[in-house]
Length: 488
Image (cartoon, rainbow, N blue to C red; front, side, top):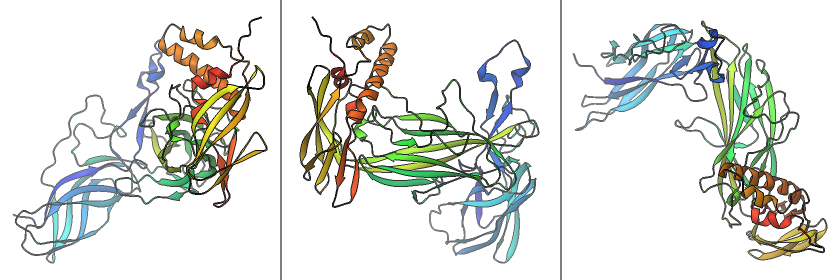
């Protein structure tokens, strides 16, 4: 007997990334006290799970085979197992053509209790008749020899493609920011905040962590920042609070608990970096691990890689930074499993060229222990600007013009001139790069405070700093700022 309309290709839809949980199983190998490995601590399951009281979807293709428009009323899912509340849907399907194309729709429902849930069919009203239909085919899932059939291990070997494990209700970490939000789409549900800055401008913003749960604590929050890697100077995004020290990969720090309905603010700064000073054409991302021990956060440093390029003028572009929070619900599963979710806030930062460095020279200073770093600054805006340097010196630069700024810089006595030659003699390329980067960081710390050039655009009432990250990343420049060897 034909069905009108025809439904096919039922599929369980995984939850969106910010709602989808990962199940962390307790270490089964911990009973062996004679063999220890840090990689044996946890086992994370990547199976598909639904969560109680969380909107879940089943995708299905539908096609009208009748030569007339068809209205489908009260289309709902039928299920077996744990409690499930399906949301009724109304469809208006066009008449069948010569080559009917099925339309993909998603049916929504809310599991109301944990357990195993099987989608068995659907019900609807067509032409005034109520229909209750079973899914004709239920192909078996491929067997997984390394998974048991106990709850919390996802679908077992006897489960159909329409059976899913429903976990208990979990807390949700909501991210709120002072930045303007971009519209979300069905394909990208993660929030995206937008900001536009001129190169060299600094703005302070915040992101608020909100535990929306009424009764479940969030624990073990791990905060990571993914952003373009800079070779010198300040990073694109920096944390403003300084109550904690930066953790290392070998000694990660855990975050404090977030009580039900609690809010916690993290303040950060956006700096209009010079995009030409990022590592690589594709803007390699760097990761910063920061613990959230209190409502105050610290500025976390960015691991940097030395690079040999000098200054490249740029025309402006959009850079992206991601705030990623991984957190665990303070509840246990039937077999002591833990449940982890991920919340992400993406920043789309548009950097507009203002006053940028186009070239530089190193000239002798007033004595053997000083040098003049002469910087060519280009005004890429449409209005005149003023530059302030060396505390009280000022110079004007017209639109699209270049001016030369001399900066007196004392040589660094902490790094001998022979240090770079010795670094090049290290046994391996990796050791050479590590030593070069250590020397570069030492010189950057000494030199950066002497390369302070501030700009103002009176007509636009804007101000900022000339980004000199490209100078600070240039080993060829920094090598000229060490104390020379004087022969007597």
